Amino acid sequence: MIKIDRLKMNLPKKFTHRASSIAYKVGELLSKQRISKVMSLDKLTIKKRLFVENISDDEIASQIVMQIMQQLKGKT
Image 1 (cartoon, rainbow, N blue to C red):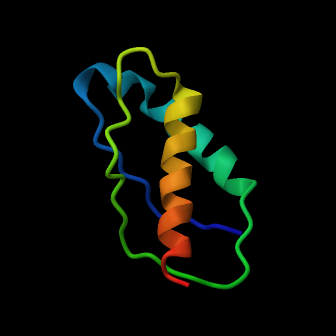
Image 2 (image 1 turned 180 degrees about the vertical axis):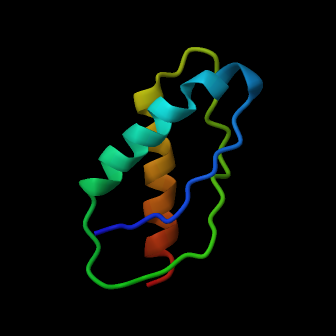
Image 3 (image 1 turned 30 degrees about the vertical axis):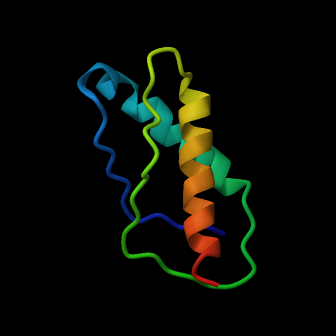
């Protein structure tokens, strides 16, 4: 199980109306991920610029989750 206490997203102005949808989709995708042991990240930063003009909320969420999982795996 992956638990997130707080998710803060700083989105470009034209994407702010999509924040709730993106956060919900991130939660959905993370609920499907499996990790084998307890790990903790105090903070993580999504480094790749995800917010291009024609990208869907699903794709943004998928890329965010991939980066979260990579950072968790980097802690093992």
